[in-house]
Image 1 (cartoon, rainbow, N blue to C red):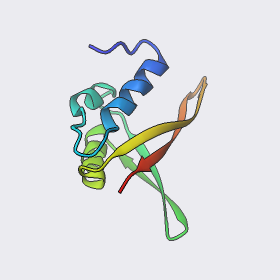
Image 2: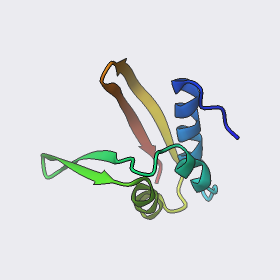
Image 3: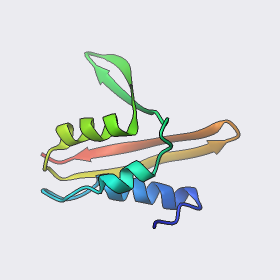
Length: 98
């Protein structure tokens, strides 16, 4: 069992379960354990110069991610973290290696 008693441990677990070298197996059981059942993950993208938002459940995110990354190397790096009374704002960069 992973210790999620602070935000650093939680984020480390998140990065660990989705990051890895070519052909490395991701830990989707760990990924599922990081969220409440009703959690929504918000994906921000830019398409044709327009910013778009996609809202996904944790399982939908995992399925989308598996299709997006395949067996390539992929690493997440934290860009910033701000915690306030209303919740958590978390931004990170994606390093997708072809």
